[in-house]
Image (tube, rainbow, N blue to C red):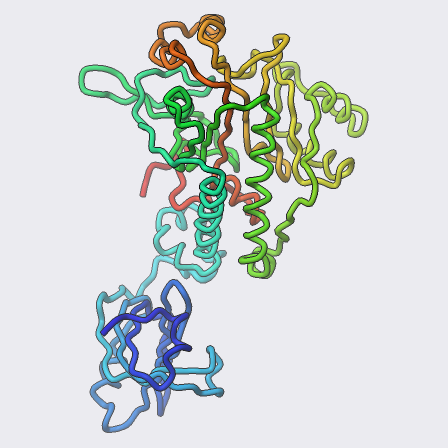
Length: 437
């Protein structure tokens, strides 16, 4: 008999149905037994009356433990007295498919019942919490929306290697691994290879995949492994084309997210999904510095001049809300010393941007340098040379003007739902001290 999901049950009243799921709770009363069964789509009440005809089943139900998985076959009946959805199943047969230890490590239904490390150690239990599971339904939908948008814009999805031979993709640290008789590194992004796709004539590509950063950071928004969506596209006129593409992609996601999950996000996470109705504002970094000093008395530390830091990002959001009534702010004209060698420069200024959303940087995007001789010079200027020789080869035989950006799905989810820490938005969190489960 084919399994039916809980959310499909209203289509099958007065029919014999089969449902599979976890035992959410059991009530064994004097004259009746109730099992609340759940799957990923919802819950249903299973009702077993206590009588001679059901004695064998009654005895069996008395041995069941919460969190065991069962398969139930029975008749689905409407009953307005049933508080849970107004219907119930009268079972003909209950089969245990796995039995749970009755002594759970912690009560996953109560977020405060365990320390964070315990929750992360037993993440498989923690994710049975309905609120926590909802985070990943929303995240999955977010990725779908980005994919839908990009396919509509004629992008092609590619899959690039995560083992790379060069360690100098950007300024961030990389993880070194033994690769037979030589060293290899875990990729920080698909940057080199999505640019290779431009020189292959693919014109528009994207990838959803893992990225690795060997940064010894324990902040609430960093992880050593995360999931990003990266894209690159050709025949652009300037980095403003890249900014426009990102703006349209984010608005598309937020619009459809609000339509599908807006009320649930508001009720469960107590935050609104705000859909922008006008272009994201743009400001040069030097002008932002002046505004932050004038308005809030903030001066960026000497070591961060030419770039952003966490405090600057927070104040940039405050400024954008006050000045433009916008949750988003594009910032341009960073120092070349703070940007990768492959960013195109004009008058020695990198042709790229950072995008701030709700006080956090979510993107560094740019027009790339596609001219071989200029790119080679900029790589040598950064002391890279031989390390990126294979990469430079991509540009020797013609490559169109192009640009792109990347977005961290986990960070976006954290900001969308206003979660306190990135780990809440990650299926399994990795930081410098956490490598299991």
